[in-house]
Image 1 (cartoon, rainbow, N blue to C red):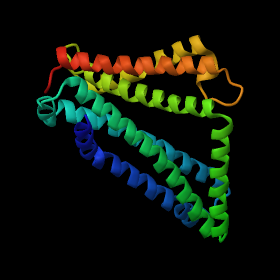
Image 2 (image 1 turned 30 degrees about the vertical axis):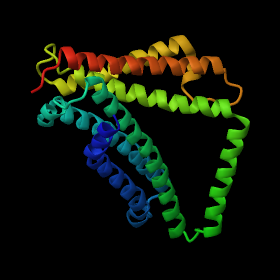
Image 3 (image 1 turned 90 degrees about the vertical axis):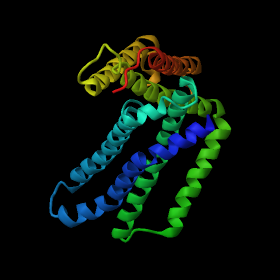
Length: 260
């Protein structure tokens, strides 16, 4: 399993690395772009906010596409012949892909934080407002607040970690399932388009059912005073669907897959 994950990590590194580099470059260059071309406009703050939003949407879209393209190429294009003939079980193969993709998404979260921090530093430097001591003081206060949160609300923190895991599992599992089911005999044309449609359809259904079962409590991270039983149940709900998607993907590959 670890060797498979290592191979998958190396194989997908280029795809995700490009998305990260473009995002970080955008975070650094956006303040210069706004200052150099749009300083005369009275709505600079609005345009800057739009540019910031486009960066976030861009990295999320790039990650989404990267997952789609990487899985589809490694399983159902020319490399798929080699992948599906490896001396490993389909379960090991899919689990390695799911776990590796989840790790990439976790790395993406840190890259986003790094990018926004770099943007803040660039803006501060250009405004002559950057202070190194204040910079380190901010991180010290952040670390102390985080430790205090862990000390006073360990259950809430653990539940939030599980929530992130559940969201990532259902995201990756749903994408893999959607891309796999369209490679069967039931879908002969426009397979990638149908895969995207199926993915959004099943997520709409899961979100709708979650709202019916748990209300609005699943839409935000857990905070003090939140019903822990409801949130734990909702986490198990998402994990269950993520597991079902993974099992469904394995079953389809073993019994109904058709490689181009």
